[in-house]
Length: 331
Image (cartoon, rainbow, N blue to C red; front, side):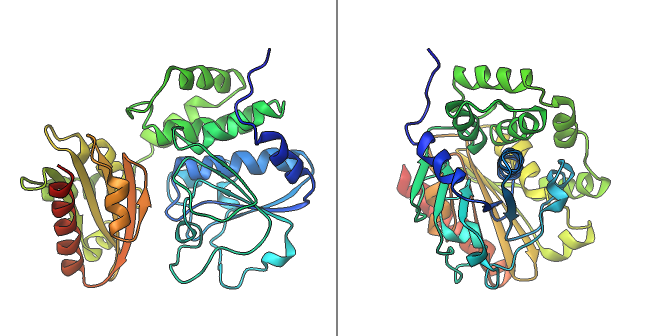
């Protein structure tokens, strides 16, 4: 007997079938799971005759922009978008409105809504398929497609493969279960272009990125009070090296969070003057999602992010102080 993953799947599919013009999304600072899930769902629904538009609060970064179809996703002005022209919103991989709209002052639009997510979710929706124990929204979509009896093609498989491998750092995260490898095997059998995704993730770095990584690593330090590693890059330095959009994720995932003996790490990036992004990763029981929430952001136990505005040095000091106090309180 075929395995059924989620009891909500059939009612979600019926809701989607009742709609023609559908919106879905990438979240703020979109990663592989965000872009891959959006492109997978768009491809599937267009194959069912739906008109699908993907919204994004910001530009799609490199190297995700080189995925098939990603260049068609344009930055959205959420304050002026004609939401009333659409029948359904299908929000992916977001737990709160700010991650959707990119602004604390713009609320989520009011429209019939379905949510697929693996974060703790605070969005209002008619139907939610939220599985916080899952490693990626792309896995939830795969299970949903399986539940409704939809056979995925090579394009969908490639996008799902990108989402799963990206969010698990190629299966390095501690939440990996045997089932994930079974699902990945089925995705590969469906025709996922694994060479393309691997090449984009690991063999596609600019010289500017490699050079600025040296600066990030040189500035990395360990806070012995809070037992975390951190590094910060100001806007002038970031701009001088061409402002590579993938800098923070590569720096923290490949290097800063790998330092022996730390419990978590953070990389602070002033991506525009007085606009600062901070990425968090945990290598212990410390829940960096809670830490990010204290700074106005959010995320998972093991990976999270926040955006702040203000003077660069004052904001860096605030972030480091908050992280230090947070870990002392968590012990």
